[in-house]
Image (cartoon, rainbow, N blue to C red; front, side):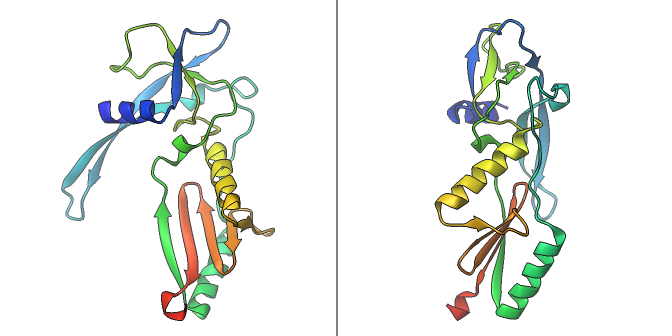
Length: 186
């Protein structure tokens, strides 16, 4: 819990402020997971501070939600294309993806239980946290903006598939598939 809390602080995820009058303060909770190795042994204990997003009200502390997912026909076509053209495929999971995007609405969350500073201050979010209804949208917009900066453009047929030259990147929330020409053919 301390490691997760420190990471959130270092990332500038929130600013501690006095609770604003008339604003809803969302509750959070700790979610615990065990990361296991190939033989079932415990590799590490993981804790994540998440927002109880089900407490959010549309139009009050969120307006728009969606999670970008590649269409099944798109990845099927890309797999067939990759096989025919000798492309390599790599899978990538973006760790703590939702914490990269700047939040675009006023959201207040209680301080993490057991790790609060003892005051009545609350966290005014600067970055999206897991559990927020708008976190997947914020993450996708952050990723799409980055991919645009490095020359990738979304396909008209599927906005979750990005292309630059002969390389394709598909987005399924925080999982990416990267298709590129095999190193043997470069």
